[in-house]
Image (cartoon, rainbow, N blue to C red; front, side, top):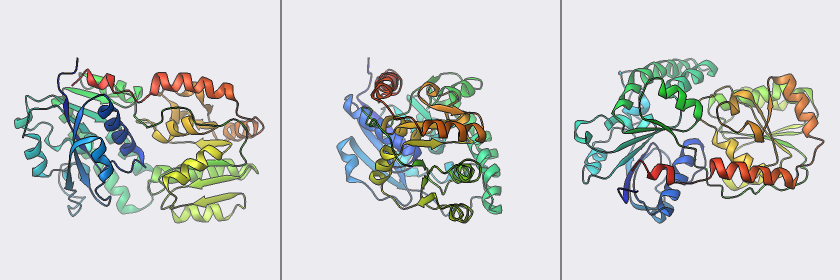
Length: 370
């Protein structure tokens, strides 16, 4: 039974519009909580995204705090992503009542172990095993200063992570993260990602291009796109469209070498959704298997065939509704096979049954911890 009808949600970013990774999970979780009768008090750090009146439809109250981006990212023992989200006003606002608190990501946990919050119900949603995520960012980064920052940040996140011992419950976004966190902490629960899709909207038939999309300013995504150009689509004539903001110079140069590969940036969420649904196959490799890629859930709800590599689906439970390749050679072979096969109504019904059962936006598992 729900003990409290109110919940503080501390978000690392303004969750509207829900157009990238973690904020997708935050926004649609808030929407599901509102639907379940919870009155959400949202605390959002902002750094470039404007306050959104749309959030008022789902939140009792919304507080915004300026992220302290002027902090030197190379000094101090606290992770930069934590130390820039330590607004004193946040603690003051949390102390105006005794309602439960949901901290979204390790990013927002500066006050998690504060003595004034000792007796509060405190939930932490982990979006990744953060030190592993930053370690991987460091491995693929080519800029020296960014590479050094990611390395240092990974070390600081590993040192800071034990703050999670002060949480009433840790809510892991994937089964893989759940097992990793359970090896170090008690009271770890799996809570599926929230994504906003209410039904399978994919259409039967065939498209005339393959699609990769992702936030290309993130090194991991840019690396995946370069992998597709260099090792997969350079070996086939199947057209590929790559979509994402701020692609690297290296990616632009590689795409320019192939007439059947197109690179698009600065597209709206609606334009990207249209491309997802029109593509014959959404191709989503990754080399970072922490957390869960919300774009994978989106293409499974909205798109036709989905081709991935093993790290993309490992420990997610989504293997059965994707085509999984072990390496680039296998990806080429499977891509050319899929290209011949229309997407069917039977496949849509299979996805509908599996995805809504295991990944529906249902707040009830969260309510029992409040």
